Length: 180
Ligand SMILES: [Zn+2]
Image (tube, rainbow, N blue to C red; front, top):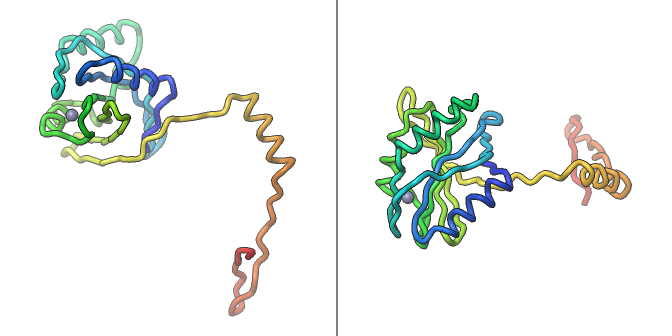
């Protein structure tokens, strides 16, 4: 499951919308728990793009990583590679496969999107051999602010009555049958 913070999704969609053709960048991903990743922020670097191609400037990425280290930040959280296919469908091209295989991290999350707002995600682990998990579940992480959460909690407690299921004996065993 891949979640993205609302502000990161707004940034992604806006970068994609503002580019005439393709555009790509990196981003910060945290492994919240096994199988659950959270995209927290994303960045772009100087790049040359066409309608059907985007080339990451590895020197610019190197400078960005160096700046992160100087600022006391951990560059190992930079585990997202994202790009837009502009007005084409989302899929993993041979070029994309090559870009992904070129990362020498433990693992990377890759995301491809387009003008239509379609999104595909995949997670690649690189050791001991490259393995790919095609992860299609992608969702904006929406959390209620504390005040709203408190008021909704009171409303649910006041209005929603949960009726405990009653066990029914079947062949001497207690089973739960839903009310009909
Ligand atoms: Zn691509």
